Length: 352
Ligand code: 13P
Ligand code: SF4
Image (cartoon, rainbow, N blue to C red; front, side, top):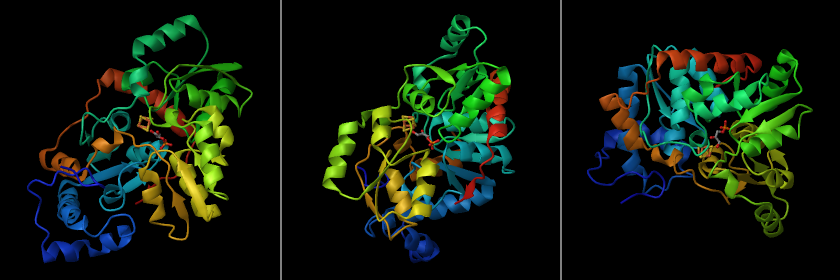
């Protein structure tokens, strides 16, 4: 059996004692708008235990913007988009990193911190983009297009990154494409594996882009008609979309950007009604900070992100599993591509 917000098993719950209630009262005040009070006694003891254990283990929890509110707001040390989480991993002093995100994010942390222990609460937290391409595919692309640089979205395995010239995320893709094209003196680059991100980037730069046919299973399901229907039913709503959506969806949106860019849009422009055309937890997490903004919620769940739960995080810290390992030689090559990307952009991470 699961609860609506956290996918947490209700068998053998930890006791919700008066001490736990007191210890977590400040955290509940923060999330009360998005977590019903009836659910809090199930979450609070696990949150309290995670926060104690995290201090004992000198661990940090890096959480992606798609994590559920009880993770995002109550146990994470740093939250952000893929770029911000990679930047934070690159600079943390903590010996243990718990990645509340999908496997490629944990692998990126391990590549940047080969001497640290990187834990992922579920080994099943994959990504349809990461599984759309292999290292062998990238070697074939190089043979087919000799001399063209390969820009690889971070949503890929270490093996794929190792075969690439430079990585990118949705927040820096245009800058990365333009910088590597200028550096290599070429007018065309290969951009893998997200076809829609590549097409959306191609609309913003004179650099020509050869793409791969990978898709995000969450964002590919949105259609331009969805957005038009939505606008008809909700006049005046501002539509923000993630660049993993098909280009015709982006064309219907008011703004497109990475998960953190969408959050910044809400924070700076304060639209009275907004829809985030992306994963569902985004609106829950952001609405906590902006009670004056009405969040309309046509969204899709990422089944991989939702494999990360409070119970899984607690288990990771108690048992120090599942440790993410990357072959050192592959990791060293992948690290060159990630660090080259990090030099192109330097957007600061945000403390949770
Ligand atoms: P961001 O880098 O924008 O957070 O995107 C990561 C992701 O997996 C989106 O689907
Ligand atoms: Fe991968 Fe899409 Fe899930 Fe992001 S939302 S982790 S791109 S499947």
